[in-house]
Image (cartoon, rainbow, N blue to C red; front, side):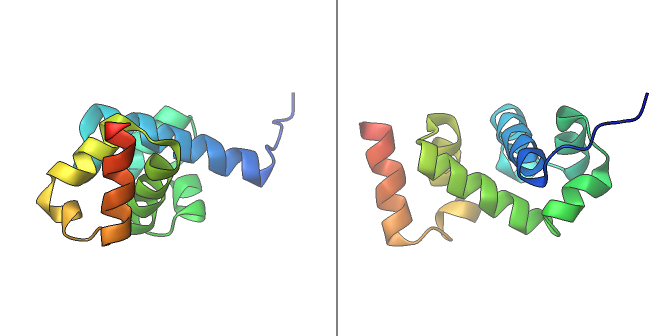
Length: 101
């Protein structure tokens, strides 16, 4: 039976949702392309196709966490000095407001 190709937008959404889940489990700094691919049930190269670098993938995770108000990942962003220092004042305020509110 031939394999069905997913719409690229659906595939990308699946990858970001998997990256969010892996981040909640391992923490932002420990997320790997391989872990995301395994969770998404795709090849490592598929993750690389949509996110060329881990930096791009981590940024997408941070943006989505802020957009959705994900308390677990927002707490990670605010408590980890690696990421806290890179958040703009506006993004810090968004993260804090989501956690308080």
